[in-house]
Image (tube, rainbow over all chains, first blue to last red; front, top):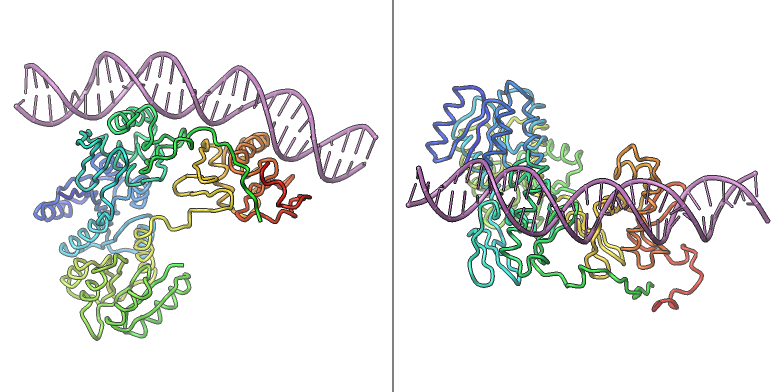
Length: 244
Length: 244
DNA sequence: GGGTGGCGTTAAGAACGCGTCAAGATCAGC
DNA sequence: GCTGATCTTGACGCGTTCTTAACGCCACCC
């Protein structure tokens, strides 16, 4: 079920949205101002955010930037018909769409569908294979040594982020923000604990990880192909370079 | 450069779009009807399509479906203010956005930026290659002589700044300020120590650097292409000291 | 020729980050 | 209300990384 977070402080609009979204089987939650809206995004991880620009406590573009700092969740902005510059500012701050009030509910719903559709593209490679284990992103299933491995929700989230960025280094801040929420960005402890869990469940030799690698001081990296063992040790530079 | 395909048959709008897009350094091409529009998408692979619904030969949603059958290229629909059902149909057919005429050019450009931004999260060219090593800025990964090289966070920061200013001279003050903070601008020692680290890990001959060059009294410079040996003051012919 | 300033190199202690373990808190299912 | 699983939190040891100082070398200037 698609979860929608509505950040708005006008009861009539709120009511209309709630009714129409619930009728289409969306899961709706509500926040009445920017601060609680940002907190709600972090806590609930909605699939899409509908944001009214006329909030009592902070500027709408600030809310957008606050979300975009750590998340790519689609944001549809709602606003009274105003200056074009406001639209431009919101879109450039990272909003995905902009609807002016009064709006047709059918149009908003269509734009909502479009935003959600874009956000979850058909994953071209939903199964990632390593010599030691395979990860099926679509089925949310991990197999190691021929048998299914049970992962807790947190473990899965962590693994999924690393696997989706296969080969690339993912910073600790990003991992913490995406798994626990942006306010946990300094809790490096969590990462260490859960990386240890994942390695114990997936790595052939958890003490010497081959696929879930630590880059000290920077973050973690998932590598599908095991690197040659020698690459981890001292790199003796071969004098093989005959230029020209 | 971002390539935009405009599918429209009204000369005034076409003219306005062409002028404004070209002024923003977009590469613009044009098709006057649905059939040639579909052909143009297939041939040119534009980064984004602006599609007018009022085409002479076929229904706009047909064009959208024709593109969506095989491509996820962002489509922004342009249309005269009409029924809401038309908007819904276009969006559900796969359009990314819908702008009604008359529209503000700034708004359209902002929506265009939003669509392009969503489609290409990694816009730049993140891999820098030299004969001796390669630097992947997005993955934060360095490879020398075929093997991964482990860099410490400070080493990586330094290298990243130099590589991002490839070919240009970067002053010591700037390097110190960006890596250690503005209050360290006089600690030239740090730079010497870490440049030595980088050279030992990356340069084929750390004592005679080819890619991480010192400009005495000014700063450092990264060069992707090795300068000719003569420029370094090498007296011997290049062939003789290969196997040392 | 001697002096000077900038650079490369090395080495040592200090500081930090990471893996690990374990215990308490919280949650979900029965 | 109980039980097991999961999450949070703190502490400790170890290896790595950072900081800092000292020394030698070279180019340049007087």
